[in-house]
Each structure stands twice: as structure tokens, then as C-alpha cells.
Amino acid sequence: MHRAGALSGDADGAESLAMECTVDWVAASGMTLVAETGSGHLLTMDGAADGGGRNLAPRPMETVLAGSGGCTAYDVVLILKRGRHDVTGCRVELKAERAPADPKVFTSIHMHFIVSGRQLNAAAVARAVALSHEKYCSASIMLAKTATITTSYEVVAA
Image 1 (tube, one colour):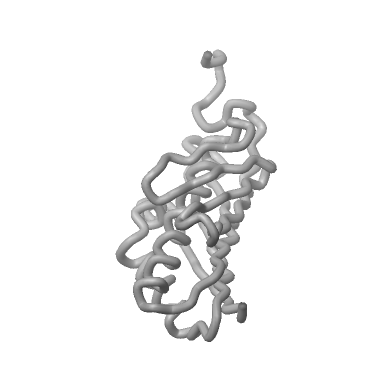
Image 2 (cartoon, rainbow, N blue to C red; image 1 turned 45 degrees about the vertical axis):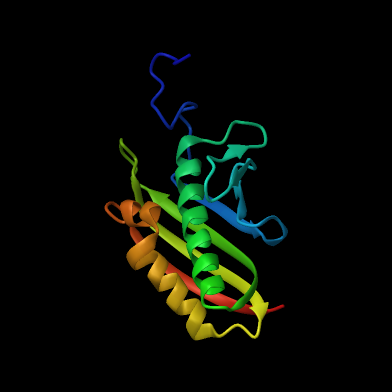
């Protein structure tokens, strides 16, 4: 049911312009990704499946941000695995700002990757992040139409 006066994506009308999200790859289960939104909702993602939150109530724009993080984490893990790198974890911490006026599109997004593995090469991680954002991640490439997207990464030994 749609309330009169409520805008799509801003159902409660009091959305903050800042947004955060964290996405973790669940290594033991193949390519499952679990996002936790800034409002505390969980959204499970997988390469071939649509995601769903634990309490089924993530805000639509948080889902967009989480989807972008899931898309790029999936790419980074897949690129590293195909390169025969021993990746054991991938987390993306996302921070975004939205325009103050409707349609309140994302105006800036920063994605910080924390990639763990055995003898992971920092150059390989940098290349995987760059390939995801320049060629493969349709979600972040689409969001780049309205938002400035920046990335950073760190490599953690497993």
C-alpha cells in the first residue's frame, strides 16, 4: 500500500542524506554476499539470485547501494579467483551522499575494499578493483552517471 505523499525510496520521509553499507563475501558458501545496511538490515546476495533482507525492510536506496557493493565485491573475488589468487575474504565498506532535492540521486560514493588472502599481491587487488569499476560492475557504472565514485583498498594477510 502506498501512502499519500510518500515518495518511492523515502517512505518515511526522514531519510538521511548520508548512507553507509558493508558487504561481506561468505567464503564457505561459494559466492554468497551478505550486506548490512546503515539502518541495521541484512540483505543476502548471490551471483545468480535476487537478494533478500533478514527482516524484509531495507530502504530502497540502501538496497541500491548494497547491490552496487555486492556487484563489485563479486567481480573482485571472481577476478582474483580466475587469476589463481588465494583470496579468503572480501569486504566493501560503502559511504554515499545523496542530493538534497528530489529525486535525491547518489552524488558521491566511496568504496573501501578490505581483501584478505594468502600471499595476495596488492597490484592484483588494485587491478581487480579497477576492472570491476571500469568494465564489469554494471551497478557502479550505472551509478557513476550521477555520482562520483572513488575507491580504496587494503590487503590483509590470511
